[in-house]
Image (cartoon, rainbow, N blue to C red; front, side):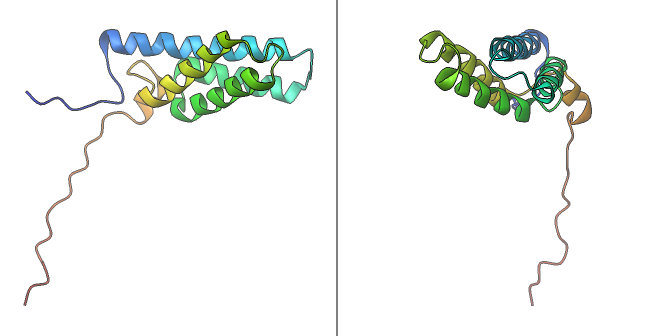
Length: 128
């Protein structure tokens, strides 16, 4: 039996992706809270809170998880605890989320859900 890959898996994989989204959002918030003593820019903090909330509910997940991955890389390289190998795991989590997608229990699944595009064959092939 042939199964097609779905960007919005249901059941246990969908719940696992929901937990992964929440995990990436929480790590992003905690890393920003640690760095807030360094640079307390209100606009950045508001952006990170909105981004974490969007990740948690699964809105624009592939794009926001790439941003979260970049932020985790920056935290690993130049953050308050830079060089600590434990900070590789947030990078891996965000990268995995970017590659796997949001799952069925997300706003993305409702907005961009399963759609099938059928292209009819051309009647005129241009043959003489």
